Length: 187
Image 1 (tube, helix red, strand yellow):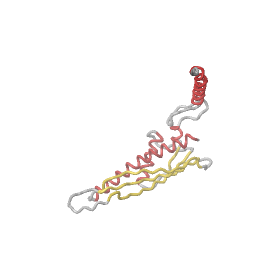
Image 2 (spheres, rainbow, N blue to C red):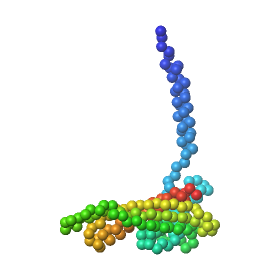
Image 3 (cartoon, helix red, strand yellow):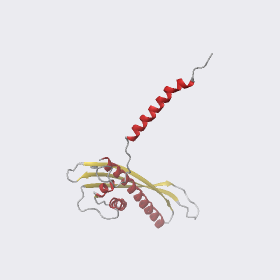
Image 4 (tube, rainbow, N blue to C red):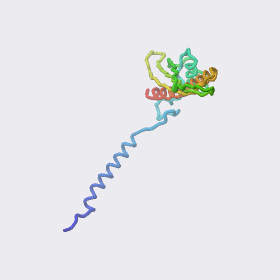
């Protein structure tokens, strides 16, 4: 009894494996990857980067303090520290809602100022429209939560809540910028 020659039976398997590897390389080479925030064009004829598109959006005024915080951060991030354009091709309607909740209710019987916990949740909804056509370009909704301590002292509690609103506004603006950049890069 003799065993079959291992070289002869492994030959077709090796050839098939090599062909599969070459086919996967060909598929992978067809993929294009580009950074989301790139300013340069991918190739000739392709529109300039996302930063230019973000700078072409005017954000409409908003009435609440925390909404104004989000709007100001977005304007700063969209325009690199400059103000909005006088005439931009896109406008953005921004609505920001806040919800303050008590995360922990601890009954304190001593004279110690033991804090309880709270959380501020900001929800931002946006709609981007083309000024010329009135066509809706993008829409989305994001929310962010920030926690804070609630001491017995009223001013300290109000200040902690406002600081949490400010932190949530910064984070919400960052999330909205990323979502809008993704929407605008898709076309």
